[in-house]
Image (cartoon, rainbow, N blue to C red; front, top):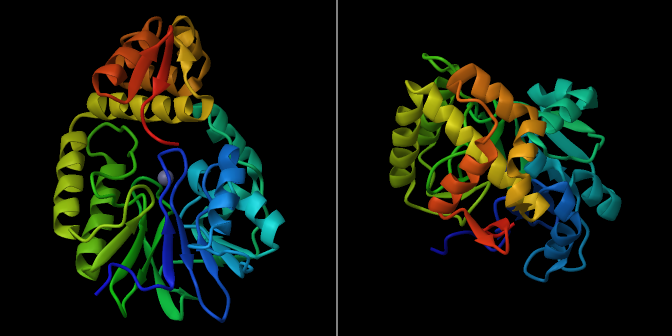
Length: 307
Ligand SMILES: [Zn+2]
């Protein structure tokens, strides 16, 4: 059996943009998640590839969760295709009051373009795509209001950021017991119960070693559960690399001033680390170069991974 039926197609993107999952059907093609706003042109180009939509219309767009790398391209997709948008029902407050998105994005130095939605979906409900029902299941943890979508007929799970092949979307730092870690573990349990044959993650290639992925995600969460300092450091690194992906990099001389300007770093440091942010930018760059996520070139730190 091929990994995925021909009607389920995936444009695998980098780390700034989530994957685009296209569910093809004569009844209308449905897209799951739209990528990051700054890369909307590239997202539309990927959708127009013959292996995805080609010249065909798009009937609907559904989001797993409302983070900037999953909804950022919604407005551009709607402009191009005029299709209705469905968001998780519990995310409605964060979209109806766009100042919540703006505040969050300013907090972490991200950006998303405002969009309108026409429908909502909640756990226990389903939508049609690729001539099958996709059940919505809660996927809390990385985003407490997020969903994942499961096709029981062929065991295909669209997991969003609840489970990747090597890890999962970051969880918030919190003094133990960390409710975000607990929630993320409950999402992993739900995935184990669904027992998917193949997982299409929000980032990275589709994979079938679900047991291995669950074990890796659990061991990561176990390391975070009792260690808010470690979780806070991890969050800072994830946020920093994400911002470097959309900025293209940063002059080494600017790193400390940049970190001082973006509120999440000061906040995380004050709450969990207490090391001060004066040289935090320099330290983050050094840590990320050592981890292979950034490289130094002509006085610039640039991300090594694809957008
Ligand atoms: Zn994501």
